[in-house]
Length: 193
Image (tube, rainbow, N blue to C red; front, side, top):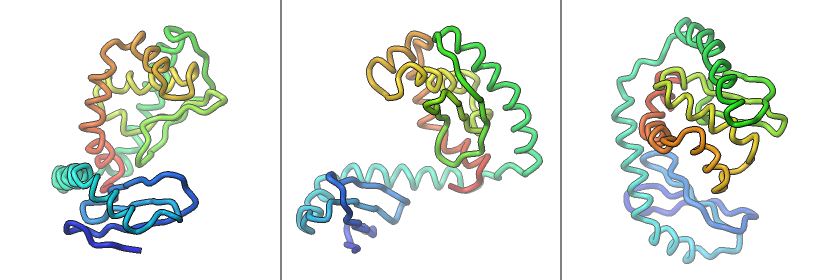
């Protein structure tokens, strides 16, 4: 089901869920996921109530599209060379920070992912995005510490963030840098997102 709202398509997807959520897919399309029993009026009211949030995210996406329009994605050879470098640097950073946090870990894998910067499995295997190699070392360290801290807390609770802050007191600066610039790195490595 589609509804037309404020110069953009809003796709409504009803499913067996308990809450309603909005996803801005691109500058022209918004997806609203809603419980099956939620009325169309209630959905429209929810959209209207969140219109400022939607507009903000649409504008952000438009800006990002403008910024990344002329970025040349890396060639296969450049990606291969960056991967080889990442396989040396990232495990080094993991070995450096793991004892400071007091955790062990399993396998360290470098991946060319389109959305995630890193992940930590229940078994302690760590995955890191190749695009991190295009970031300042402090940002790479933040992601490494973030994932290693999941060895203590598999969530983003206040305790988790305290653990991160104990190791990197200025982690918020690095997180902010990644939030504001990460999409450029992803575009350089993966092409248009």
